[in-house]
Amino acid sequence: MLNRRLWSILRPLLSSMRDLLPIVLVVGFFQLVVLQQPIPNFGQILMGVVLVVFGLTFFIKGLEMGLFPIGESMAYAFASKGSIFWLLLFAFSLGFGTTVAEPALIAVAKEAAVVAAESGMIENSPVAKASYASGLRYTVALSVGFAILLGVFRIIKGWPIHYLIIGGYIGVVVMTMFAPVEIIGIAYDSGGVTTSTITVPLVTALGVGLASSIRGRNPMVDGFGLIAFASLTPMIFVMAYGMVIS
Amino acid sequence: MNDLLNLVVDTAIGTVRDVLPIAAIIIGFQLLVIRKPIPNLKNLLVGFFYVLLGLALFLIGLEEALFPIGKLMAQQLTDPAFILGSEIGRMVRWDDYGWIYLFGFAIGFATTIAEPSLLAVAIKAEEVSGGGISINGLRTAVALGVAVGIALGTFRIVSGTPLHYYIITGYVVVIIQTFRAPKMIIALAYDSGGVTTSTVTVPLVTALGLGLASTVPGRSTMLDGFGLIAFASLFPIISVMGYAQLAQWRAERERARRADE
Image: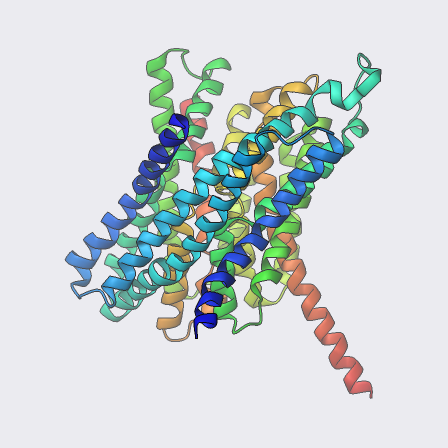
């Protein structure tokens, strides 16, 4: 009995350790073999690794107790309520609300403002830069809100995902030809920074929950894909923003 | 010690701020629109607390241990003194950067395996597919995609070829694969492009990109430093669909062999 309890605590810890092992090996190999330097602050690094292992373990436990169930239960509740309007509003708020305050996005927007000012796209003053950065931030947040909304609507309607995604790709390619060069790298990267570690599980659970509670939808075919929309639309919106500004 | 305390407080505040809008939206809709009690509320709150605690510990640990050394390594590996060794002073060529490509590949793979949001999606995918897609199979496929993406992305920065050629070619491959891959994998493959690039991968990869763009002659950090993340989000789509295609092809071959016997 005691043995089994101990094991139930140890096993998730071990699996987190295994997840972290590749990083430790890569860093160790390059530091010791390629760069041929000692590992600085060994004690501090060891402590950091222990924290990461515990952090990952708690995160996964919390995922299964908190984030997955709430995403699913809200999906069921909306599906049984049958109000598409509220569901879409919820989808939009979730996308917009989780993105607008995202620290990674704030950092990227600030960086992008510096690039734009140096290339003469906007005036090189703090006011112009701040307004450019916040404009960019709201553009990305709007685009993610729109993405989750569209993605949820797709699940309800059962549209095949690839037409929408391929349409989006064509949009990205066409926009790339017309958007100012300075914005392209940032636009492409902004697709990646929008989906935070808390949003992803929640949105995934929502999509899968919806697809399993609507008749005729398959959770595997229809349930995934919300994240894909959220990484695609920011590229288009940010390039559009660049075109409008310049 | 003071630094550590600051870091802990900052991270805790940051994580809470991350969760706050989500909590507000959920509670708002739950009270005003759904108007039903939340099932298992106590479990849920404990779960949310674990998520917060876990994420905060995770970030503090990364900040303490892996980011400093990873960023330092990115700098050292891109340093011309390391790349040229005794031949310092001559022009660099793209093939001087072998260790960089290998580092890009290895760190892309390793950070993706540790990425919590990918793990979340993989857990869901295994559950939904009834085990047809395994957690580790999906993660390995995604990690290989990121690895190839980052290695190619560093090559692009070194060689100075335009970003959009690669991205557009990648899109064409994705579109062709979409029409050939098993239908059930498509949405998941598209999703895996977005989840690879978060907490662990972005800071290290950005440091690598900026380090390269600032040391390779003729590159600008502004124009060439970005774009690695885009590679890391595109290639997993290809590798995940490829993984499913491979599995399908093997199953078909097996079936054909059985039919022959």
